Length: 183
Image 1 (tube, rainbow, N blue to C red):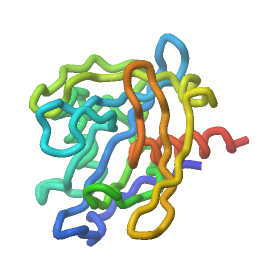
Image 2 (cartoon, one colour):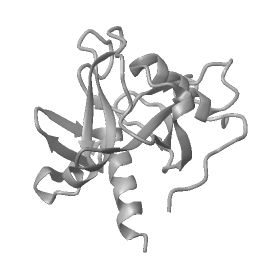
Image 3 (cartoon, one colour):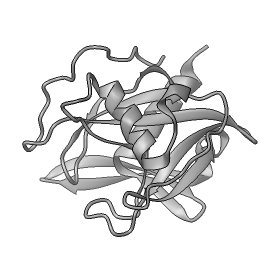
Image 4 (cartoon, rainbow, N blue to C red):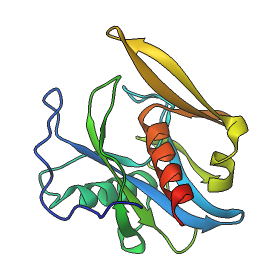
């Protein structure tokens, strides 16, 4: 089950002096069934250049909560009107490894595939990936890496033309595990 969405002020979780972040995990019906909307980060970005991710970013003091942060960032990055998104819960909160940040992923449902307008300052492309593709074992793998002497499990989804990995892949795995184990 997807956990309830947080409605209080953002948690006081600061990593390396940075405020918490939030992402939206946009879920909608597509031509081949339920699908997720991802972004490919712009190639000129300083961090995570060209990586596949969910829309999102750091909490602004003007945002009343982290769900608002996720919705605002999605609107800024890909032009999805926040009024079209119904936040239904959140996935497991996590801290990234490569550039430490605390992230709260919110699952947001849209009635149909949204029209998007990318912000080229942040986004190179929008990807619509059917859940059925993500459930295909042929595109999924895990590797064990070592970080600071400790084993670290890294998840990968090999999409056509892109590799989904890292924190975003962990969020996708979390979502897939939750929806496939519900009865």
